[in-house]
Length: 306
Image (tube, rainbow, N blue to C red; front, side, top):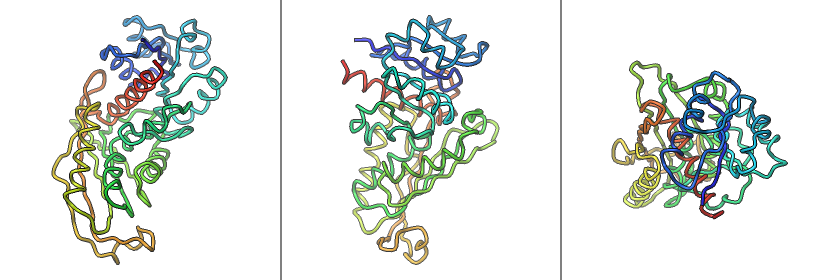
């Protein structure tokens, strides 16, 4: 059974998402591409691929005849725009997958908690850094309590468009919240670095977790298993080296962790995310992991709705 979707946002993320869905030939079919710039490359590509388009935003989408058959709307705009888009779509009962940091709906990381929120009307995909790192925090947390988790997402400056740059504050806040609420850390912190290197570097992510005594082999196996689960829908997602364990002095990290936390070890995980280069360049793994995760969610919604 085919499930029709509409994509709001004809920029890099929305266009890559459209091409991914087209290439997959799975249960999803793009019925409409929505933008606000009539001259955007995304809308032009959509028209060449036989997808109906509008440059009149969400209001234009609602007026399109294709809207009647759309069951899922994927919003690839910005946090501020999503608030308005969600309000405009609310009376029509469409399922929304939000690729912005607006966080109106529950945070979803596909291999961690997707099945818990399949019935939510608005699903939030956190951030690119969240999609890359929260699974690792969750992998450690399912073995042993995580008193503190810190992630550093380094992305090519060239891959950060106006929407990403406008949402830097939302990125850090939303990702830190997801580290705690989805990843399971008692406290979380997120940092993003826009690397200006030329040629651009592939996305790199560092995940640091402070834990007590635990079976290191079990933690390592849990992390490696989680990496394989993410790589099933993001083939360029991989460990850069073996999971590391470093003893820590509890006194040195007392300001980071809750007073009652027992901290003995720092777990360090180093990741690389290479994009599939469907539309975006391979170094834009930060955008690729968002579109891949969003497509995974929409496909799963389609599966349970069949």
